[in-house]
Every structure is written in structure tokens, then in C-alpha cells.
Image 1 (cartoon, rainbow, N blue to C red):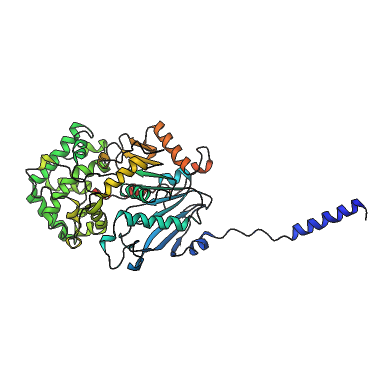
Image 2 (tube, one colour; image 1 turned 135 degrees about the vertical axis):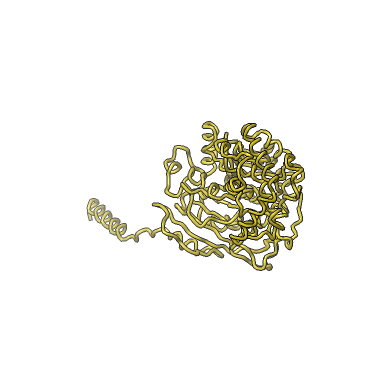
Length: 463
């Protein structure tokens, strides 16, 4: 056979062989990949919340006690907003229950990533039955998150960022302290760090500086006036409770619940309001109904009822055992208070749980952040009382930032920072996530961006 004819024949054979090659298999569906994860259950998949997104309700089987697997298991709820396995993953630790709707936290938007939102252990329904409350501590919760990361990093192989707001931000830092290599960066919003439970003078100082002198005086005056009218206002509060099926067993009576509510009005005002609302603070001459209506608006009548407290007992238990709880002196109310010094975390915990404070937990966290923390971003609001005792960076902290958003409250965000700081913070988050600032993917918008649980949740003093 001539050389040219041989080449033509070989070319034809190669073409036939190539043409006969099987088509490349499609990547497995994400739902099938999730079902293959041991201990993970898909509870439901909602209709796509926006183009290119899928939203799953999940449960993962967790040991009740990670040090003793024989102690039983419980199911921990999560939600997953899926973009693609080629995108970063944002681990959103709520610190409380998990919202049942799809949303994208700010870091998720900045990196156009997937988002896994995890319910904190002991918040219902993610609670063991029967519940041994000594298993509710920061190490056990951090180990919950560690097991989740290990299980899903087999699917989501790109960079991981953790985030959370308030108690959720605290939770994300605790996870990093015990498992620093699980994620590549952490963004903690408005997260307090009460290193010394017995020393809260920074909160007292905060309330002498926040806002304007006129607004501070108006808030102090309305608290004094409310306690001066205690008899009449408590009677109205009890009537409201009776009409609405509310009780006060946990805090031991409506009078005590009322005083604690008045104690917290100034805190709640600055947590969720700001200078623009100072003009709405009532004068001391308003009617009882108008005064109570403002207190309800700012603090919430339900907050100190059994029905309002019960869902947040896991938070109060943690505050009473490890996290600490702010106790401003409120000297302007001292002569009017019947329960001075009793407005503390354990007063919101059923007596049967008998919490005992362990003073070393937050000191350990503080030492880790200052001495070994890395890739941490803290964002606080200038007018948010929870920021009076913030996490603080130290000489051993690496590649980390801490910023205060001017004029912001408990809803502070990277977007609320001054432009230069916002740009630096954004670049850090995207660098940790392996996303460049020029990437179109990092700038994408979604119909689910408008709901932010850090702002939707109004936990009054629960952070």
C-alpha cells in the first residue's frame, strides 16, 4: 500500500474510534451526592428560590456527647443553598434556630458561594431527647460543626468561609478555636466577647457616650418614669398577659418580668434603633398606655414571658454557664428596683436546669484569638451595646481585621463600613475564599439577597 493511502486509512480508523468513544458522563446530581453522605438526610427540597440556585432542608445525625458516642444521637437541622461544587462554601452558624427560608448572608453574596446554615444544638427541634443540658457547651457545638465540615468537604472541595451574626458570630469563632483548619476564613458580625463575667464597666461607659446627651437623658428619664408608675403599669401588663395566654413562671412573676423589661429598654433601643428614633422616645408626661406601647415596641411584652423565653432557654443556659451575660449597673434606677442585681442570665433559665458558671471558657477563647487566631474579620456597629466588649486582636493574631461601622447598630455589615475599610474587608473575604475582586461571579446578585436573618431576628436582648 502506498504511504499516502496508508495514512488515509489510519486517519479514517482514528476518526471512527474517536467517534465511537462513549460520551462523557454528566456530573452526579447534588441531591444524589448529598444522599450518599453517611448520616445526612434530605428532609425536603424547595422550588428554586432564584435562577441557578437549589435549596435543601437537611438533617445530620450527631452524637449527643462527642466524647461518648454510646450516649445516643440527635438530628441537627441545616439548610443548604447550592450554587455549584465549583464555588466556595459559606458555613453560616446561626447560634440559634435555623431560618426555614433561603437567604444569602453578606459573605455568601461577596463570593457568590454556596451556603450551609446550621441550627445550634439544643434549639428545637435539634435537641436530644431526653436532654442532658451539660452537653450544651461551646466544644460540643464546635465539634458538631467540625463533623459537618468533614462530611461535606468531600463534595464542596473549594475554599470554605464561616460566618455568623451576634451569637452566631461568637459560635463561628468558637468553632475556629477548636478546629482552626476547618475553614479558610471567618467573618463574625457584632459578636461580643465577655472575657470576665464579673467586670462589665465597659457597658456602663458605652451608655455614657452613645448617641447624644439629650437622647441618653430621655431614655434614662423614661425608665425612671416607668418604675415610678410600677403599680399601674404592672396591672396593665398582667391584664395583657391574661388576655393573651401569657405566664411568668420562669422569671417568677409579672412584677419581676416588668422590671427586667424596663431595665432593658435602653439597651434594646440602641441595639435596633438609632439617633433617628430619639425623637420618638416618649416624654415623662405621656399616658400609661402610651408609655407601655413604646416599651412594647422597643423591648417586646412577650420577651420575658414563659412563652417568649422558652425558645431561647439554650442561649440563656449557655450565657449562664460559659458565655457570660452583660449586667450594666443602671445606677439611675437603683432606688426604684425591687430585684437589683437579679437581671442576669440564670433568671431566664428554669430552675430545674441549675446552670453553674464555668469562668475559664471565654478566657481560653480570648487567648486563642490574641495569640493564634488567623483569617478573622470582626465587624461591629458604633451604636450597638453588644460591641462594648468585643473580640480583640493581639500580637499573635495573623491576617485579621476588626472594624466599627459608624452610626450602625446590631445590623452592622461590611457594606456599612467607611469605603476604604469596606474595600479592604471585602478583598480579605474574597482572598480567603479564593475569589478575586474582579471576578464577575463575586458580584452577582440574587433574589434571595433581600432577606437577612441577622436583621429579621429581633431577639430583644438576646443578641
